[in-house]
Amino acid sequence: MAYYSSLKEIEVDIHNLQREPAKRLVIDTIKESRYKNISTIKFITGRGNHINSIEERGVLCEAFPSWMSDTEIKHLIEHCKKYDGYYLVYLDFERVYLNYFLNFNFIEFFIHDFDYKGCLITLFLFIITFIFTITITIILFLISYILIVAYARSLSIINY
Image (cartoon, rainbow, N blue to C red; front, side, top):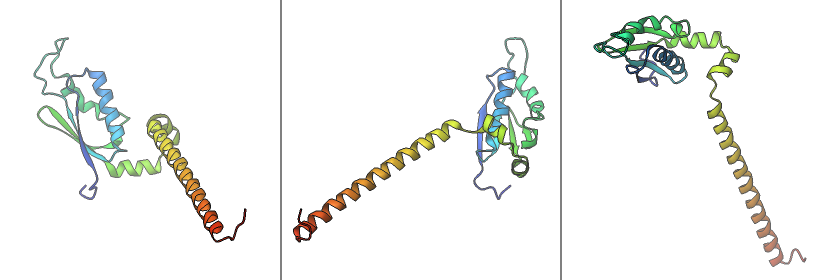
C-alpha cells in the first residue's frame, strides 16, 4: 500500500470502556476512517491483566477479533493483528473505494455519513464571503463613479 502516501494512522484507547460501548466505538471509528484517508487504526484494548467489576478478565482483548467480522465493517478491513495490549487494524482501501463507487447508497450516506454541520458551516462562510465580495464591488464601483464625475466636472465636461 505504499502508493497511498496521504493515508494516516490513528490511535483509539478503548481499554477503559465496557464491552458494548467499546464495540460501537470500534465500528464507528472504522466506518468513519474510510472517508478520512486513515489506513491503520491502533485500538488499545489492554492486556487483560486486570479483573473488572463482574470478575471477568481480558474482556475487550478477547472480544475484539470477533468485532472485526461485524457486517458493518468486515468489508473495510484488510487485516487485523494482535500485539501486546493493542490491535492494529489495516483498512482495505482498494475494496473500500471499489465498493464505494459501485454500490454507493445516497440514502445511507445522507442519513448516516453526511457531515451536515460541516456543510452548513461551509455554506455560511460561502454566503458571508459572497456578500462581502458584492459589498466591496459596489463600494468600489461607487467610488469610481464619484471620481469619474468629479474629474469630468473639473474638465467642465459635465455642468450640473
